[in-house]
Length: 346
Image (cartoon, rainbow, N blue to C red; front, side, top):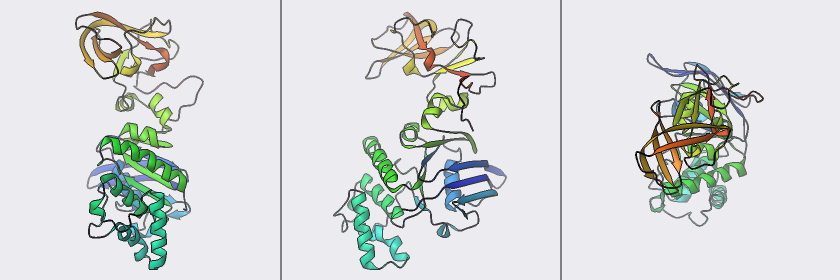
């Protein structure tokens, strides 16, 4: 399987008078898995379609290895794209669906059958050659769609929310299967998703987008622990924010605001000297399966915390968040990087 690096410089897309993508710069390493992540309408699918050649650029350049793709039509870019809807031909068998791209390229029937058998083995679907695609499960259809894209040995694989139509259990299973296949082939892959968990689990690199701009490009761990700004933090599950007081940790950091996730705020934790503490009245307590989520009114803010046991509404309680779980932001709502580490915010 061939693989190439992808480079985007100043990629801009206008639709009428509306700017959809604005000055996108991105480097994707050969053989890596990159996720375009963001809320609906942020421009991630438009960016994927621009790379594929389905959406023309208003300005900018796209290069795959040494080749300039910017002005090439989709069929000349030699990339492969898997759509959310599978786009399989219902009147064809599994073998015919997988072999069709090879047939278009003039590959002989004998060679097509050999390549189809190899691909089905990779997809763990050996023996499905004669099966009608209408008789396949959703997960099997998605694997066939992926195989049809990969069978032409493309240098770049583009995935447009390929798992979003599947139920949760199958989606979790296919994440690991897709990642395993991508690693084994070593193909440069870019996937659009709005699912943060999916991106964090699968990607080498995540591109967080908002309103047509790239907000942050980083590894999953850095993105989760050091989001670029307060908006990125909230998108990534930081559901509590408080104004810093003199009694709080990180006095030397210049933090004005702290963000933290509910799972890191506890009502029943042993006292810790380096922790943020807020006190208030419990207004809600909801069972979540592995414990309880508690809403506390501190007068300054409503904050969520966890508890191992139920807490009656009206109870006076104190939540505690360890310093290591606090995400500091400055007066401009930008993340304040650790003093001894470089932050890879775009």
